[in-house]
Image 1 (cartoon, protein in one colour):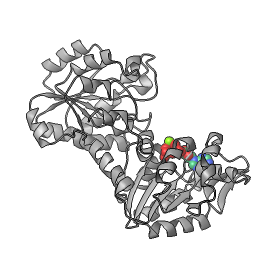
Image 2: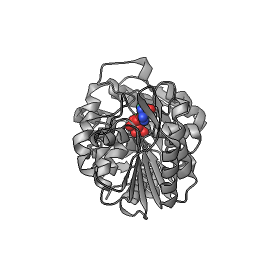
Image 3: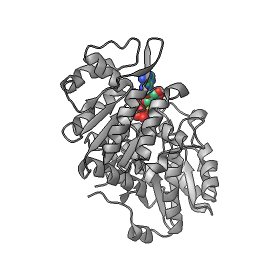
Image 4: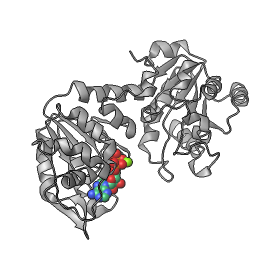
Length: 367
Ligand code: ADP
Ligand code: MG
């Protein structure tokens, strides 16, 4: 059983300090409109309601402990979160945790934000020494960062050895909704898979292979299938390493490939109108829909049409719908459709690992 935070736990820690692992892994320029920021707020509010002080910890970017880099500092989020919560959030730079502890103890404030943990190499090394020092800052630990729970990092895994540890409310929602579409789904179940990083998505295809009724493909995933079938795709994006792994699926009648396209030069950049219509029809027949990966190069408006049509079809269907992935979520934010989905995951890689049936180290550490 995963230990999740509940009212009983919160009451017990009134007046104490929680170390809350959140996910502020947000690209520069996207800070203010981020789905991930909005996902953090309810949990912080919950702690405040119960009189629990909070030390927020996160990473930002892939960094490997090369020291400081202002571009991926967490500092801007102190202001952003303060404004959202209507409460001062104290940014605490540096990693001298003894000093930080003294500072927190002296402070009148109740929410603190530490600097990007990946400025330190020991974070990604899952260092017990680093985690033990970090653990000094609080009385208990809460993981509400589903999106990084597939990483064996000190602030996700090693820290749970030094403090009573719980899964946060957001982590719980992630697990509950993903379990539902994996194990307690209603048929017909439709998976829509697009995007660029094909090899990271094969595991999901494998897991759902005998479960889902339909797979609607687009983007690099569809391109890889077409190459594997011996079709020519010109200069279109595809992932060569995925070809051997999809060979076994080529003859399946449950796999839908695009039959018309939007092109530029010699490249397929979106599904065409006929395909969008067929995909919409399949979505309307479904009782459960899982979507990861845009069906075209949606950053350019002309090639966003296919993904938009599919997004709207899901949004207006009665199906239980789950979406996720960095770019998929960006697209849904832009369309204002997040709330129209039953659940939108904050995870990219973590969601794909979970939907592939893999165990996530950050979640296993809470058992
Ligand atoms: P997610 O982050 O949602 O999991 P991916 O990271 O796998 O999705 O892929 C997202 C990217 O795939 C987007 O930047 C999009 O432009 C690109 N993409 C999708 N289809 C195509 C295509 N046909 N040609 C070029 N790029 C594509
Ligand atoms: Mg992505």
